[in-house]
Amino acid sequence: MGKKLYLDIDYNDLCWRGDGGKEQLTRIFDKMAAHGFSGAVIDCFCEGDAFFPSERFAMYRNRFRSPNMDRTAARLREFPVLEYALGLARDRGLRLLPYLRLGDDAWAPAHGNAFFRQHPEYFLTSRC
Image 1 (tube, rainbow, N blue to C red):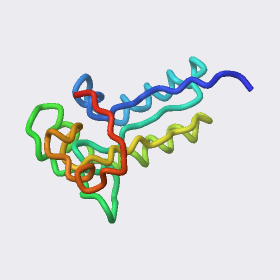
Image 2: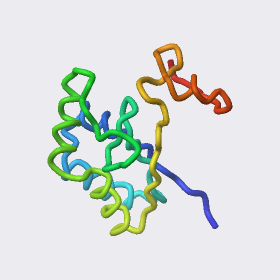
Image 3: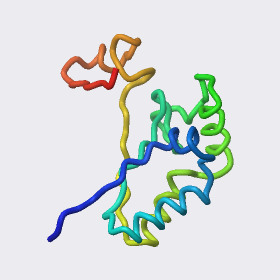
């Protein structure tokens, strides 16, 4: 078995640097398939809110104001982003792995992350 190559897809970044629409997602998956990628890891949380219907986590509420967050929230109201990406991956023979950020509010405990204060047995790394 050869080496596997996965792309990290941060959906908020797609909305920040593009429009986060179906066409943009489709182009990404087409390019991955054409260039020998095995699949992708997709970020399906932002600031502790889910990008998919969840009984445990709130659906993205757009609590933090910025143009890319507004685009993210708008796209999530337009179509099921994660479900669409799963279909694109499946149709192209690629794997799609969800990246779940467990933090409730931010990336680091210093910013008020209650999950890691309540569960010190877990380890957190942070880009902060």
